[in-house]
Image 1 (tube, helix red, strand yellow):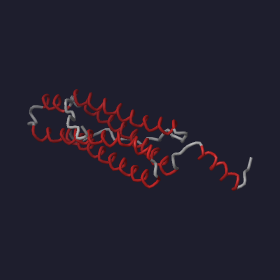
Image 2 (tube, rainbow, N blue to C red):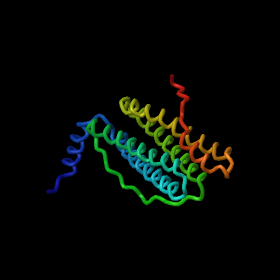
Image 3 (spheres, helix red, strand yellow):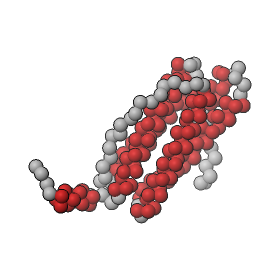
Image 4 (cartoon, rainbow, N blue to C red):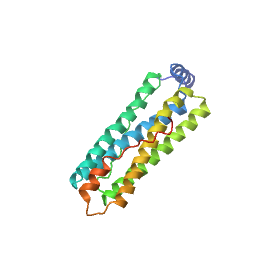
Length: 186
């Protein structure tokens, strides 16, 4: 069946009526879903590398991080669906499986978290431009989460620099126990 351009535009307009989420916000959130799923895959690769190289505690840390990133993606996915918008299952590109060192694994984690923070901030800017206060409210949780994620990655890199290389088991165990307890919002 062929529809005229006016009919197609009317159908698009009707589809947009079912949600208050603006098209620009929907697109940005779908891109964020993909970014979170890519993060999950990267952390899974990091976990596998740590496992193969005897860093059992760090492997456990990254397995947990992988699952957490998937949950972040699903939170966005459900939000879009709940708002009557369209959430897309993202394509995930191939992820590198090898790293030069434990330090390079944690450097990669910090780089990934900084990228996610930048993306969240970009989406907040879009929400403000579109007067989308509901989505901005959702994103406040992610802002706090990113503060924690970046802190932990930075602290792990500091520990790698502070603990002598001949204390690999101690380092591995210590890295997996890093937490963020400095909640500046309370």
